Amino acid sequence: MVSLVCPVYNEERYIGRFIDSILRQDLPEGQMEVLFVDGMSSDRTRSIIQEAIKAHPFISLTDNPHRTSPYALNIGIQAAHGDYIVRMDAHAEYPTDYLSSLLRYKEELPRAENVGGVCITLPTSDSTKAVAISKVLSSPFGMGNSYFRTGTDNIREVDTVPFGCFSRDLFSRIGYFDTSLIRNQDDEFNGRIINSGGKIYLIPSIRIKYYARDTIAKTRRMFYQYGLYKPLVNKKLGAPATIRQFFPLLFLLGLTVGGVLSLFFEPVRYIYLAVIALYLFIGLVLGSMSAILTDRPMLILYMPWVFLNVHLSYGWGYLMGIIKVMGNKSLDAKPNR
Image 1 (spheres, rainbow, N blue to C red):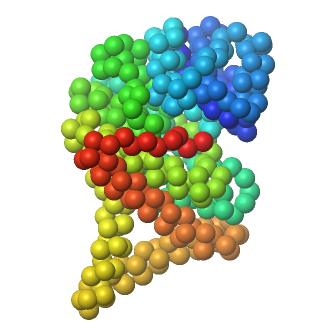
Image 2: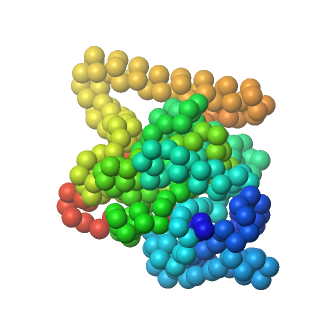
Image 3: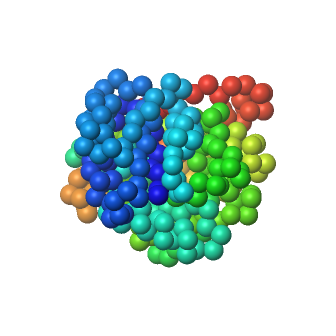
């Protein structure tokens, strides 16, 4: 049996589509259970799930009074009965062979402790702003070499995957999700997998439809939190997992320190202006290409603005995270809803 663990909070816009995609899975009857762990939703999320439970007894609903994802994941895992655990997100829709494919690759690939697919990031509405956010979150310029977001041609070892599949006994071997991490708990857990000698695989043929945040403010807050918790993850793991995480911080420092130095040193000023011009040029080119493909002229301006928000938010969060970790202060970030 495979147990699907899904943290939820105020997901009424997405939960119906998510449940439908789970009910279409091609696993034999009786081989799946779905455990929703709710952070005390105030919208219709609970009532929608409860209606599904009436028709499908393999679905259950449990409360998460702590309200954050790592607590929800641990509650669900501890209540699960399956030999395999799949961590899922209600913001996504999954292909009918999602679970069967994960289980097959989990058994076939050498030393596979976590396998997952590629996220196809979709806008939450037809607005140009929502389309711009989804384009940025799928772009190598926006996300670096985060292959689960930007895609890959071949099965490859990676440092993290979304909505992955684990053997149940993995948690008894390396522990559960770290409840001190509101964000990046997957990164820290995957880091422990790699440190213990396990492998994480991205399967490009498994494609998940993921709905991005619907406003730039929510996207900015989400990436600030990703940056904020990254230094704590690095501290817990003993080393950074990837190089790409440093680029937004370096970009932020380059803008601020370079801006000050350019006031006093003419050569620095030319370099500073050249870097800014190159950044804007890349954003405008990518925005123009997306504008042509989608017939949305405003993407030319929206996409550079979203790129800037994502990079600076992550970089600022990372800087604040370093300061707080070094000062042994609480990160104190509320989850982005």
